[in-house]
Amino acid sequence: MNLYYESSDGTIINFLEGPLNAQDPESLVAGKWSYSTISGVIGIGRVKRFWRSTEERKLKVNVLADNAAEFNEVMDLMHRTFDRDVRRMKPGKLWWNDYYKEVFAVENDHDEFDEQMESIEKTILFISVHPVWTKKTTFQYLPSTVATGGLDYPMDYGFDYDQAVLIETVNNASIGEANFEIIFYGPCINPSVTIEGHEYTLYVTLSAGEYATINSKTKKIIKHAVDGAEENIFHLRERESYIFEPIPEGNISVMRSKSVGLDISIFDERGEPRWI
Image (cartoon, rainbow, N blue to C red):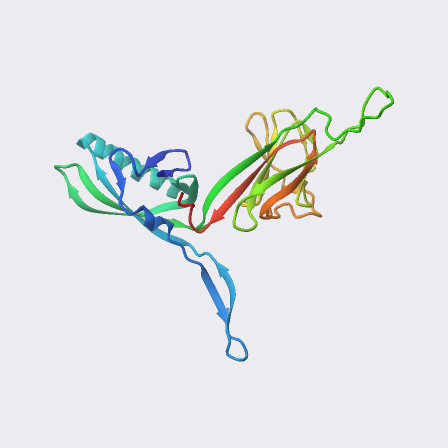
């Protein structure tokens, strides 16, 4: 399996490689729903709602280095990496194979330090304010210059009538509806896509090399310029159709102009990652 921490700046700490060896990784995948109940008039209660509260999980890691220099290096790397994310208020990602959870490492305990063996047992406390394991799957829809669904008339008019809209599919394999990120690529004007009958439209002009993102998790809509500059274009959304509507479960329809290129990323969010 793969088990590692990826910091907000991309630094990787692999808990199953080199001098590090995670002792109880299964402790990270424990999960719990919080809930509230109400009592009925005849004494029969019912659940009012479920939610996930801020979560704490501990991971024990054995550090066994070949020499003092390696021991000091890996211990300092963990400290600097974890504390940098906390100071910046930017969570890192705790990866379990191809699923991740956004976390902060807020506490470290140490036991069984052996200076002769350059070893120690380290316990790391992770907290997560959005305690779900997430897998991001991206589907690409390229612009097309090929006539699709056209009508080939027997008389020679010099052209065939062409279908301007493509009807395709996207597969949401999550447990229920899912958060998403849609990326529209330029050049295009007022890009739009309809997913299972729901419209996602931006009233913006994108030049070649520019793109715009709609993210239902962050509730942000950003235009990205060629030079990397970012512009908040939340005000340029279609207001009659909720722009952050989650994507339904299953194999569902995608309708778009064939001249528009886009990506649809599905965030499969679950209480524990897939074990296989």
